[in-house]
Amino acid sequence: MLLRIKQSQIRQLKDEAYCSNPIEACALLFGKSIKTAYSVKKVVVAANILNSIVEFAINPQFVVVELKKAETEGLDLVGFFHSHSARAYPSIVDLKNMKLWPNTSWLIFSLTEEKIAAYMIRNDKLEKIGLKTES
Ligand SMILES: [Zn+2]
Image (cartoon, rainbow, N blue to C red; front, side, top):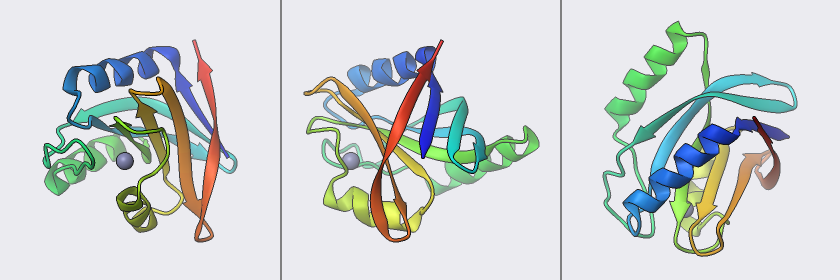
């Protein structure tokens, strides 16, 4: 699996992570999915309603509104972004939440490692996703 994302979108997400640090930043990633790749077309930054430094949650009503908007634009929810002050690897809480959103990519930016990585749950297994940044 591959996640295609623009350099400008990565920059936007990193900026968001640095701005909200130490609170975890989060965003919805909308785009197109074809069999082996997700292509991010739109980044929607969301508030972390938990105001937490170790986990995040997005207001479900906000998600529904954005899902409806995206639908009219012909876009699907292809991923979630959030930042970590730990390593760029899903936490135990992340893994639980990821199971609720199978086949959706989880993009994690580690402020401590300055590293970004993507994962997904597929066939009940954690899988690392290739990241392809495009200009
Ligand atoms: Zn996390």
